[in-house]
Amino acid sequence: MSDRGIATVLAESTCDVLERMFFLELAPLADAPTPRDPITAEVTFAGDPPGRFSLTMEREAARMAAADFLGADPEEIVSHQQDEVVCELANMICGSVLSQIESDVTFRLEQPVVADAREAVRPPAGATFDASIRGGTLHAEIRMETVECPVTERVF
Amino acid sequence: MAYRVLIADDSPLMRSFVRRVIEFSGFELSECFEASNGAEALEVLRSEWVDAILTDINMPVVDGEEFLRRLAEDELLKSIPAIVISTDGTRNRIDRLIALGARGYVTKPFLPETLRGELERHLGVACE
Image (cartoon, rainbow over all chains, first blue to last red; front, side):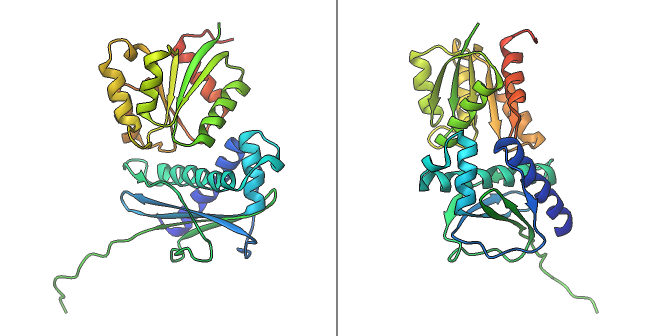
């Protein structure tokens, strides 16, 4: 599947997860804004092909999402719950995307980890999706690794 | 009639969410037990009877697959319907877990009525 096709699945999955599990609506953004006070969760996956998914959310947006997810007052949400919700969200979106584009292949997700957005090793541009939600913005990105076949013989 | 449910998931956030969704869906829940992995879930089941189990797959110590295997080996516990909740919606994975003894499979994201429907279906609750 092309990056464009994967980007469509990524956008649909992100909307689906946020609406069904977090009861949040989002508005797609054409350009990726620079996030303020971001939290980034990364998920590495093994499969055919393997790759990496990352989700960056502004902290305030993560706080709102955690409040909706837990049915709590946003003021009650503490820092580690914001991190956990971004990880859980990353896990769900990544799983949803892979289930659709690798529906006949078994894949395995590693545990999501929080990375400092400034220090995170960002994957080279793959399929991306940006949106605004209550409290800020989010940026989702998935990159499938491609394995190049070794050239054993060249025929000229 | 109200039911006793065990939720096994390594994420406290997800356990809390699933519990809230069950309550929100209108499912008759009398008691809810929680475990952070399959080993803890088996420990709970040694002292508490539950009507249904909701389990994640990727958990530390004893994961969802091993948990289902151990339930299937136990003459008493294998009668409890175990429903898997996972992000993995691939056919191979679903078939594998059903073969291990899972009675149902709910893919995240899910709606409250989906989870309620799955619980009621395996508990033999008549549809309203």
